[in-house]
Amino acid sequence: MTKSELVIWGGFWDESDGPLALDELNSHASVTCYFLSQALAAHFDVIQISSFLDAEAILNHPDAVAALSTFQAGFTRLSQERPDTLQAIKQRFSGRLCSIVDLVSFQSYAEDILFTVIAPRMTLKERLKRLRSGAAIHHMGWCADPAHCRPRRKDKVFTLFLDHGHYAEDDYTHLFIDALNTLSQNEKTPPMRIFIQANQGIEEWPLGTPWHGERYQRASKVPWTKIQEYYGRCDLFCVTHRESAGLGVIEAAMSGAVTVIPKNPTPFISPDLIATGLPHVLTDCTANAIAGAISAALKSGIDRQSNHERLAKSHGWNVAASSIARALQ
Image (cartoon, rainbow, N blue to C red; front, side):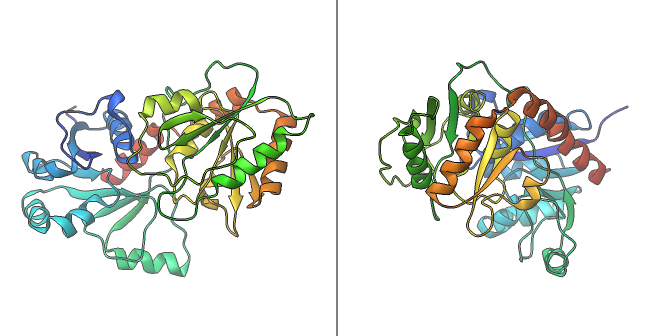
């Protein structure tokens, strides 16, 4: 039986030629495009367009069942930046225009379908968002790749990974550094290794050193495959700023780590995502509370392999691909 064509448009905002390669991945859009293309190939004949600037290439496949953007609300952004291009696509492309979003905002979208990472609630506010959006809303889920996001061999030293700081809003990296420095002064604390994603790449943080107040730069990207090597070695993954639907969180969790999530006053990760089975520790947003949470994890230990196996079954890209395929059939 011949499969229907599906165009997947996503990857990089600047120029890019050909299908995405694993060693090129360095963003949410590129990771999602790469792994969804693989997973959706079980359901469709997938055509991949890897540059935002090449949206016109969708018109080379006018009879595809849909064009799916892994750029967040990509067609809505195209309507703002290149309205003539979007108009041509709407006139000459027979399939549905779809995009992935973390969640639906109060706005009108150019898409026919929005696939959400966070499951929509059926509150009055969410119903109004749906009406305002002008699109059909389907839940895709929170995903990572089990083959790459897995526990890796490490020494017996308890290892923590501090996520990069926020590049626009409040960053709480200093609270984690203060907490870890305090713990390191206690002779009862076992040895720890601390890795942090900073502007110069992934660094091992020397305990006892005060935080220098670095503001993370969005352009300071580390290759995705290198990040997974560090995720696979860590026992705890620490969320240092608010995320709408942090890809790094689910990747580190599938790699076996327990996530430390501050709340101030609400959790830095959506409670709806936490509730999907994320192994986590919720803590107040103070250095003392964070130190207590890390100390408790040090004492209790973490079964990294069990965490990986459980999330691999429920949060793989194949789960999202099945949801998308059902919506497009």
